[in-house]
Length: 416
Image 1 (cartoon, helix red, strand yellow):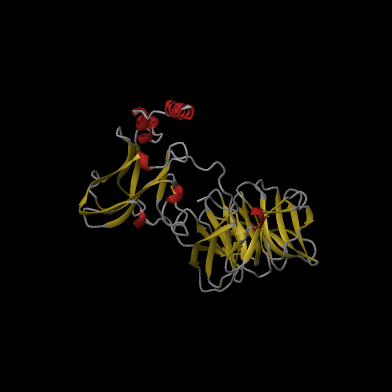
Image 2 (tube, helix red, strand yellow):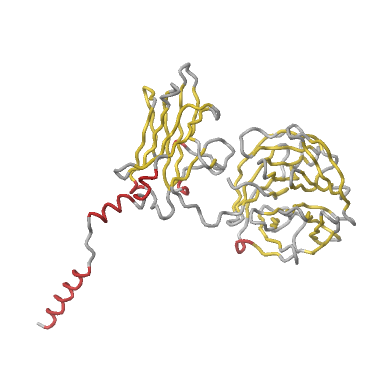
């Protein structure tokens, strides 16, 4: 009898401590944390067809029934919509191919409209989206539109972010919380015969994604002298064999173009404050190159000459423009030279890297080196370099980059 009383008491205690599910709790689940944004109003984005034709708008908002909605509207322009694809969800789940191009056929909200429509609306219950607190969600809206005269174009709702594949199209954050620490990004080129192969390198994860393969002329050679002009979004590189300087707009999908010919073969290149810097592979001279507003080589001037016989591997300008760092082989050892721009004085440090090491400053202001683990090999490691004492720190605890060929050069660049 004593045991029975104990069990009954335990059941009563358990029942008394359980939380009662209320209608308010159910309502909060339905809103998924977004209730506070109900009165924030709508977000209206221009719908661009063929990149530069304003055919209407896409409106994002939250309704009183705890739904997110996206409304395509071309009624003012007279264009009609025959196909729509809309993604709303965690940015990490957005269907993309490896270079970052959106797979619109895999967007979860899609439709073919026959007959074509002037307006289309999708609604998504907020309970089906990631919680508001972490991470929120992003939106991408794509469609196919037709003009009154029969012109057919693909169209995207303009957003705050472009996709990383150099194609066109946008996505937008809708109460989305981005990661606290954005990744450190570098760009790399590899040895090729007639094409630029451009990799997007995530320093944090040691991952390299091939984002561009582009045929750039009949002249074979390897592509070196990589540099990024932050103020314009232009990526510069050289054909080592022909001394041609090439330019690519990373913010558009236009092909690369030749800006002219340098005086010498570039052993490495970098950009700072409107000027391109490189070091001659044969003369060890430091050059400053000015270009016109149309990105045509205007002047190639020698600034200084590196002392001694050094095989230059790469160069990188410090973020403040105070020092040009040069990595190369001197008497069989890898040396990191620092050329002070104001005084033209050289400083040198020995660092334990092989002669294929390439250097660039990351978006965090740190000087990084990428070098094959074995010379000529396809496995590379990333290191940070302490520019005051030459101490190397391997990034990601031994993680490696695996590509077909070693990088011919690396550069800073935008986070796409």
